[in-house]
Length: 431
Image 1 (spheres, rainbow, N blue to C red):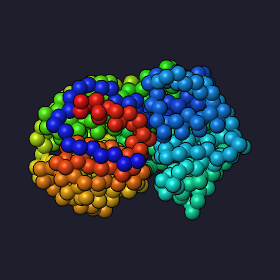
Image 2: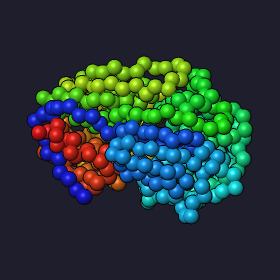
Image 3: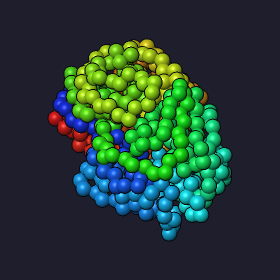
């Protein structure tokens, strides 16, 4: 499905971004592992998160959907049911990487996880390695790709250092640790998003943060109070970029999650002199269970180039393509370093962003671990291929609104993976 996005004279209005995708995934998974029913308010109903609900159903959980709200009656921490066939994760990379942590501890039962063509190209060896150290039995195609076979076994606690900061790999290990013998510690070279840790703390798990390390002690059961999912800062980021780039724009975004491990993009925009007002959470030392929210007031303004260093990347990983787009309009050269993780997302986002924006008139080049873009005052327009990647599709749409001639996005349907109402919301802001 192709869509054309024409330049507009200004955006205005207020809206609430869709519910957070990362937190929705985790809420459904922990609900399935819990000993009592878990009510989830404002669950994200999108392709990826629907795959998670389907997966936990296959594993024995009962799922009730009532509008935006979901109730999950879990199978229990150690009582996942062996399904009749493979679990289809669709295009949900978070599900593919988190779910094996739970399944690896289901002694005597076997599971197979598979997905679409994109998932089959994304490596899973980074979760296989730590789970095998814990005593898990896993096998993957060519040693690193889906389908992934998990044979439940008794797990032992480990201490594990990640080479690259990854919330998904960290979360997989933490979920496995809940049913392992003893206390498991995970270390990262820099901090990544901490939704799993906050939710485990909320569920009564003995979990502690000490610097770059997180330690979790095994648990008998999980008891999770009702959850309300905040607005997704990664989805809101596209609206923020539109408000900053399109002249005469003024937007109010309601109820956006501002957990400090997710606001890296907003801080980068502010550093580029973008106008984004809101109460962002300060960096926390100790773990807290709260997921803070804030309204964001966004307005158009001139931008200055910046450099995004490797330690910032995990806190803005999903929004870095938007940094490239902002760089096209900023004065000077914008550089992103240490972002090699972008090459193993739903698509190779470094290649996709560079080729896509260059086709629209950008002065941009790829580096092994990021990109450099020299601001030229804007973009001409043209055609951009989404490559089946939801964030590339939305990037093309925002580029079209801010361009001189408009942008045709090839494969716009990909946006529904995380933001089903994206085009409708843009239309409201343009009216």
